[in-house]
Length: 185
Image (tube, rainbow, N blue to C red; front, side, top):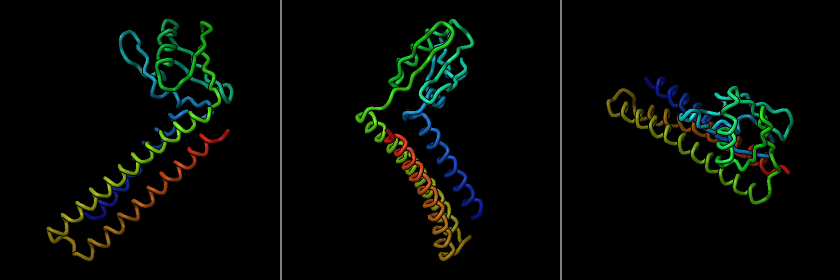
């Protein structure tokens, strides 16, 4: 029973790490990445549809994304969705393909992005701490039912804490890498 609680907690923490990682990938640095457009929803015949389900997104150069919609009639809606997003990018349309140049970041925008990624990292840490709390509550319930001893409870709580520390360190490492990427000129 205890192993199940520990494995479940670790599994949930891994999912939290993946969520933080995917959120980080949607934050614009100075490089072109198709993941930047993952959150963009396009109004496609009255239905909000993810951009990656309407078009091919590619990276021909380090600072350029190209978007080629499969349905040419959706070009205008794709452009509108990009302009309305919080990315701060301006698309150029030649009738068959939309080019999205990624400009260099200015110092003010870098500071804003640093705050954004710190917020994302903190959300991840909070999620991991919540998972730790839930696991500890399950362990305490086992101890109350006299299924494990007080000493076992303390030992298992220490294991949960070690797992928690490991994943929080992982988030901190991801944060410092992303921060370095943003501050890179």
